[in-house]
Length: 277
Image (cartoon, rainbow, N blue to C red; front, side):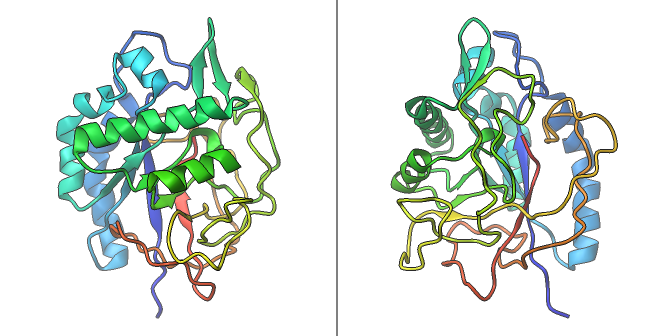
């Protein structure tokens, strides 16, 4: 039987989306997950027949700097835990958000220069802590834009796992949250790995042999088993249950660490399974 490779991404971030300023609250969701992780690895290994490697995406952005004192604060605070993950062969990348303090937290997606700045803060903080560039990236709230895609490409990011195909444009994943601009419509987004056109990030550019690769999420319907009051991430205990009833793509990206991805193949498209935040 042919294998079905999966990329499993988990965000390392605060439990609440609109954090208290200067509070430095612990990441209770992440801390709990770390106690459950050995059993999870064993269960995945039993199915795969091999030890799994996961992808962790770390918050290192202006909101973290505001709430915790530095964009590197979570990396510093959970240095031992992250070292354990890396020792297991896991990959580590960044997961910035567009939160901006304007007397209250606002998801400032309308200001593309601010969005690019948050990406730079995360990439620079990662390089400062780990002495190497972050190759994996996921923007918060499933937000993407042409300026951000080109910025990530120019910055040398290898894989982006932000795109969630099949969604209409919305102000925010949580309607009650203050936000500017929109999280773009992705109903035309491919459901396979591709290198985006520099002119339109939702269109594959098959002429490109290098540069940024988009790895969209797997696609299905969401069955909410309880009210969604926050993000269903490793850093949040709240959230619903995402239960795919159909899969629109097969996979090429294995659930193993890959820092030098091969160009996407049209005959073997890839999918990722990412916690949404």
